Length: 219
Image (cartoon, rainbow, N blue to C red; front, side, top):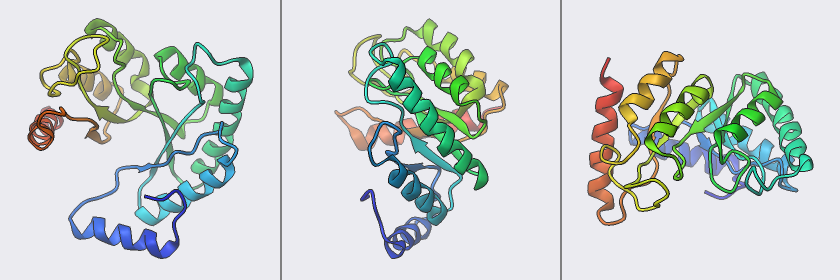
């Protein structure tokens, strides 16, 4: 949807969502402290979250990968997210930073540096596996990030370093193990299908949703 929406349009979109028996798990903003429009993006994201009745807002950190970022880039991201986290906390909202390539959160070390720098419980993470992880590394990283996970963006790959997607149950990432690790840290959030196999998107979506539902419903 457009980055800037009227209250009328937000209400219209929310009604369309509710009429289909759905809820908004998280407002997926592109607010980023590295943006010259960050203050506007922040206000628009908070407005949209209120309109959609969700207590989570997705945010971003940086314009480059963690290895390329200098101290100024880290300082800008941390200071901006400190301000945003305080605003979110005042409104009983959670900010969820996207784990993503090409951003400061492209490694678990980068995620932890951001979390520890902001030091506010209102800042959490959207977990997703990193395409360069091995199965063993994914388990280790899940243990590290587990206390800070607000939502899971599920996707899977046929092999480490290969961007070709698989069904979630068939890839190298063991989601049964990952979700168990998160549960042990108190996770009770949404687990979402983020990407599907290009060869059969509808069939893949149905299969992935059914598999994740089974994992979420299992003790």
